[in-house]
Length: 98
Image 1 (cartoon, rainbow, N blue to C red):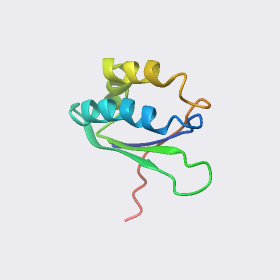
Image 2: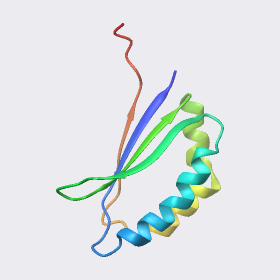
Image 3: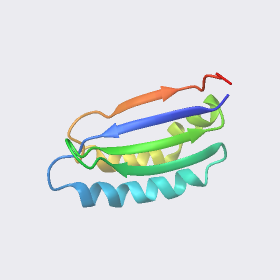
Image 4: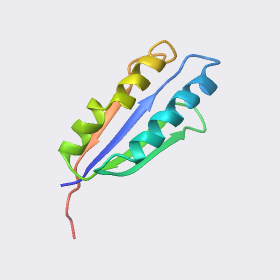
């Protein structure tokens, strides 16, 4: 069963460019992972202007593989002093209402 993950990340003021640079590497590598169906980075227009990772995986195993990947771990280390707080991560599964 597919898995949708939405991760919301707030960064410290003036750190948008540094966050985006680190995220570009992670996004590119993540898109090449087996089991990753969709992986994008967005930014809110208003409010906190949080960054939003929009991710779709083939199954739970693909999510676990992504989280164990070297590029995901490196991204976490690269942004640990850039992020204003721990990310909010929402993990969902589809509901068939057809």
